[in-house]
Amino acid sequence: MSAASQSIDSAPDLELSSRSSEFEWNYYGWRVALAACFGVMAGFGSLFVYTFSVFVKPLGAEFGWSREAISRGFAIAAVTLGACSPFIGRWIDRFGPRRMILVCVTVFGCGVASLALLHSGLWQFYLTCFLLGVVGNGAAHLAYSRSISTWFEKRLGTALAVVMLGAGLGAMILPVVAQALVTANGWRIAYALLGTLPLLLGLPLSFLYIRDRKTQQTVISPAPDILSGKTWQQGLRSFAFWIIVAILCVSAISMNGAISQLSAMLTDRGITASGAALCASILGGSSLLARVGVGRMLDRFFGAHVALGVNLITAFGIYMLAHASTLASGSLAATLIGIGAGGEAALTPYLLTRYFGLRGFSTLYGLTWTFYAVAAAIGPVILGRTFDATGSYASVLLSLAVGLAVAAAMNLFLPKYPQLTT
Image 1 (tube, rainbow, N blue to C red):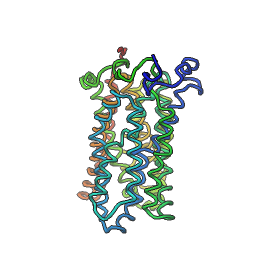
Image 2: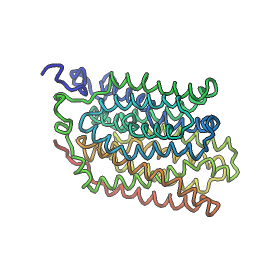
Image 3: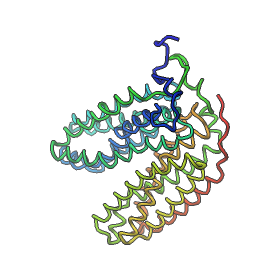
Image 4: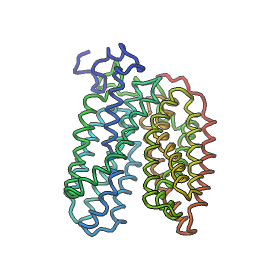
């Protein structure tokens, strides 16, 4: 087979993977994982989501847009991402992740940078947000997780945790960077410089290191013909898939609802604004640590049992938040909820690979993103509406905690991992 006919998604030095194992740090897969980590850090979930609030006031001051109007841009991007994720996943399964990543990262970076050229028409802002949502998951966990899963078997949980660390690092670093850029140079320069981050970090690292571990594949052969596992259609007919989706939806409603109202509910109970901000920071820190810890646990224990523990911890954190009235109790509740937020990021792709293999992985993962996006949008609305009606979050938080505990028990119905064949 000539070099020209080999897939661009195959590793450049396939002998390297046979000379070292995934338990050794010189294994090529760890380079892939590290490149994916930085790619995710410069992707949609970090660069767009966590910096969005920094630009709300500057955009309102520049154009006279209301905060509701600006927030619609975020909603457009989030809903579009959820709707497009199954199609992104299907194309990744068909053509491989590397091609999709390179295209989506390029469009995403240029799209963010183009926000520097905004004028007074809201349509331009909304159109750009729509475009970012279309390519968002091609420059995020969805695409990178598929490539990682081809390189790891025994240490897949740890490898996925390394990738998910990128989102945590982005959440901690990028808002501060964005605010500093806005303060020093204005929002237009800030958007332009942030847009270069995917192009200067995610794009070259993905081009150099993101490869599937394959030994035989031509450009003509589609990936599903050589990867083991079930088709996405078979996955949709599986009881295990719908258990995973059901738990994910309840978790998304509960966690996103609690996180979105965290500062408001703590300050309502007499905790200072700085104390509430500290709780939010603690939540982010525990989420970051949980990504690594849960990943390591997945490599040692049955995934459904790990998921059960993570979901129960989250449920208890939400229960504590319903009663938190001191900085200490609020911090503990935030810590437990953060464990759930960080752990969930690694659990879903891990369980999908174990139950369904890689043949239809990206399509199935994309579908879970659609369900997650809808559920995540519902949570804040439920909490906000309940507070408007009752003046308290306590009753709805207790209901969500009980609901998540019941959903967690559904993990006990997940079967043993099947033997997957091509």
